[in-house]
Image 1 (cartoon, one colour):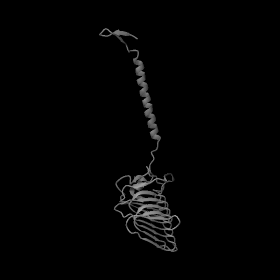
Image 2 (cartoon, helix red, strand yellow; image 1 turned 90 degrees about the vertical axis):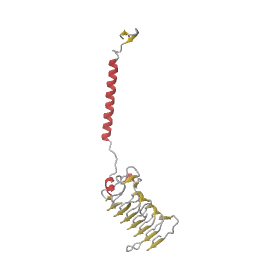
Image 3 (cartoon, one colour; image 1 turned 30 degrees about the horizontal axis):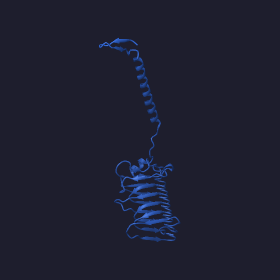
Image 4 (cartoon, helix red, strand yellow; image 1 turned 135 degrees about the vertical axis):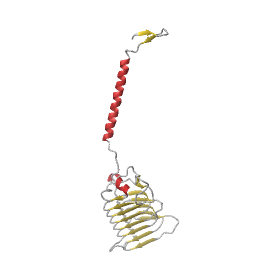
Length: 241
């Protein structure tokens, strides 16, 4: 290396020959950084962000067997609606055969109503089958096998936490919690249901010709809690058996 005398007379090493190495290193690092950014952008452009295919319909408060046939709460316990403070009409309507069902891969997931002031209506064959909800104000199911094998946890609200199940094997194998009054009408309605109630239970098989067995079968379980009186009424053949 070349040397020279400083103003104080000391020898000073010249860095003229080291500068090319420093510049090369800076250029190399800049190129490497750009490559990392490019790779990151490439990966991001090829990664699909998972979303719930039912989100738009659910946000509208109106679902059918096409728009809400394979729902996937994203994430598990997702608040619905995802926009606004509650459903536009104050309830979620699941209308038509197969409306409001979870996708097989999402079978263990729940939706959470953003407010328990809203309620649920399910109408049509297999509507709300295996559907799972928390924080629901009230619910009503109409149609063959509607609400089958679902899990619905009700919550205190301006609604009275009542549930109605009307139809052939409606609400069969379903699990309900924090229900006030439960009404089961139809052949094998509420079959093998598990329900926790604070109010009363009404079971009626005779609402259809030849209907039998509402609130029946070996695994049916109705648990009552609270300090109020509870009424249990069973009408029709083999009802509450």
